[in-house]
Length: 251
Image (cartoon, rainbow, N blue to C red; front, side, top):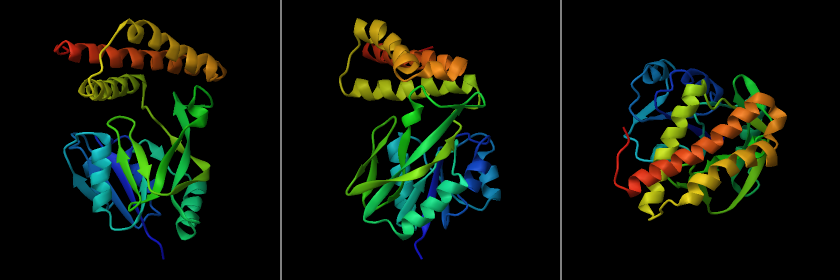
C-alpha cells in the first residue's frame, strides 16, 4: 500500500493547527516543522500525536526541503497551516498515489476565503499550488512564494482545498510585512535597486490588475480591499528594498 507523509510548516499557528492536522488525518505520517513558536502551537500539536521537528527559520524553501528530507514515505503532501484538505480532495489524493499515471506530482486548486467570504475573483480564481509529490523528483526553491522544481510531469486534482489565509485584517497586514521583508532581502542580495517606477507605477497598477483585470470588483468590498492591499504589498516591498539599498533600518 502506498503511504503518504503530510508536512505542515508552522510559526505561531495555534489558531489553525488542530484543524490543519485533522484535515490530513488520512496521511500515514504527519510532520510539524516548527520555527520555534511562542504560542500554544506545539502544545496543541503534541496532543494530536504528530511528529514535531523544530528548526530555526531561514526561508520557506529551506524549511520545507529540510522537513521533506525527514519524511519516512516517498509521497509528500505539503499543507500550510491555514489550508484544509476537503473530503473530496482527500479522496483524490488517495486515488492519485495509488495510480499516479507517471505523474511525479499534482497541482491542487485553492478556494480562498477573506472576512468569512469566499473570494471568487481578484486573481484567486486561478490559484493553484503543487502540494502532492514524490520527494525524489521535486524540490523547493525561492525565498518567498517558493516554487517546486520537478523532474517529471505534473498532473492536476479536480477539487479545491480551502485556504483561510488571514485570521483578520491585522494578520493580513503582518503577513504583507513579513513577505515584503523577505522579498526585499532577496532582491537586495541579487543587486536590485529602486527607482520611481517601483514606487509610483507598480503599486497602483497592481491595484488595477486585481480589481479590474482579474475582476475583483465582482467580489464587492472584500475584492476592493484585497486589491488595494495588494498594491500596498508591492509598495511595502520596494520601500523595504530602498531602505536596504541605503543601509538603513526600520524602526
